[in-house]
Length: 78
Image (cartoon, rainbow, N blue to C red):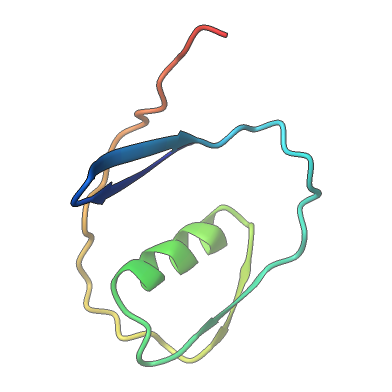
């Protein structure tokens, strides 16, 4: 998985490795009627990948997706 952040200084990319040292801890994501935008995307992704349980109330649900990229994980020589 590739995580990219864009700031005024430029773009920073970090590659998340599959071989993690930490176990898959149980996750609970708290959501409310004020949860919107990026928080909805993260919460939904964690839920859809069976990685977290969502607890709370329906989110703001503005119904838009910010950006969707196809699998852009680069293959880098090791």
